[in-house]
Length: 117
Image (cartoon, rainbow, N blue to C red; front, side, top):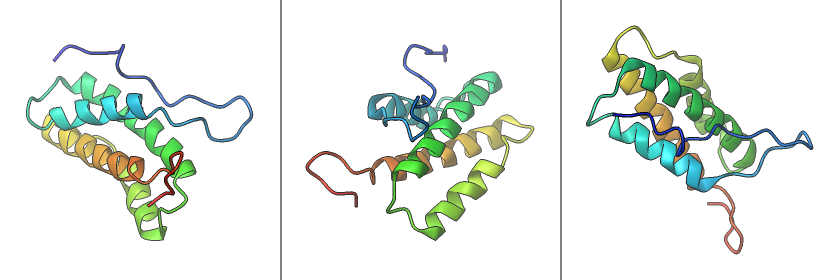
């Protein structure tokens, strides 16, 4: 699997100090790459990159999704505290879990004309 840095962008910082706007396209591309890692294992260094992007996206989404309750926040925080682990399998599993948390939070962001779930 070749790195697709043009499709993965880290979560941006907002100049005003508040949460940056959510780039749904970039986050979705990262989630899709992470989910694909489950079926076509990439190199470990690619998983390190995916983890970095997913961590940034999760931090942004947690600051944006106000409907995420304490249990969801605790689960996501626990995933963020874990590392990739020493092996390829543990790294794939961790990236997959981060992607699933990202996907859940992304589905719960408020969008124009639709309140958050």
